[in-house]
Figure 1 (cartoon, one colour):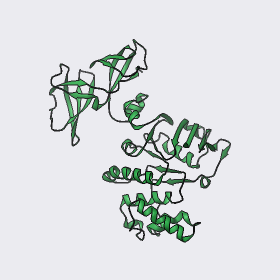
Figure 2: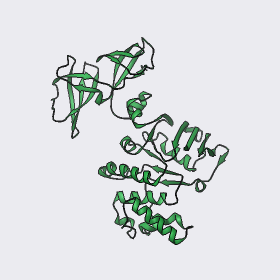
Figure 3: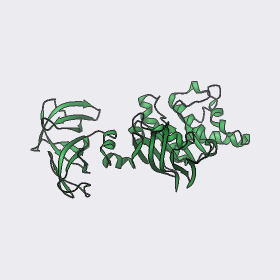
Figure 4: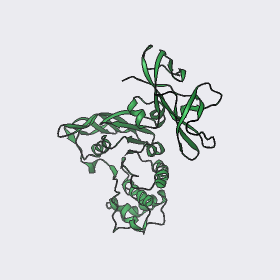
Length: 347
């Protein structure tokens, strides 16, 4: 069942649309994410779902029941939503246990204490209940903020750029840890972030926003390997486009040869297209007759990312093991090995 659904949702400020005709569904117990560049409407969408902004058109539903429309607004406090803001907003004068239990004042003291201990155990801080926020690391503070929002057992937890103030190492580790916490806690989550790697590490489904529109709502795998538009492909992952020509419903020809698609191409035979190649679609193979020139290489630990020129105007990216070193200006053999042939109409 869908915990959250938006239908043709639009939000406007002084007549200017910030969110336009957004349709998405977040299933109960799943983790979803909205990604996109700054100013694309991510946070506005989240705030509308929370009940802080009224839609200009469309509606928001929880468990199939409308909670927001141009004619109706259920107050935020009646939506059973947890909201974790970017700055966390922990109370500095309260202990960790007091912060977590802040929204549980209506419960008897024994039940409140039990719920707090349960959450301290869940977030991996069972012995930090008496500590204060300034005594915790950034990652520990983030987990406390999450636990505080989970304490009243909300039907939906909203996270607004939850990792933006953390150091790079924590930004890699914490999403995986929070995914475990949400799974074990049975929490339905929607987060917004501009960092696709955070979304990939945590989420079951991801939406890509651009200029207030939700371009694609899909699994991380499909967002990366089967983007529905060039805008999605440009934002998610790295890649380059080569000019191509559709031969028939399964084949396209480009500078790398004739490619066969496992599914029907969206363009008709004879159409000129741009063909997307991700870095993992290109393999360096010295036995190949197709040659490319190394323009640049970037060390990425286990791999080098190579920028390769195949002619004066077209370039590709290629990931290759870092123990195989190729120097700039060196000629190398390459092969195209795309698992998915992705084509876009020429604009």
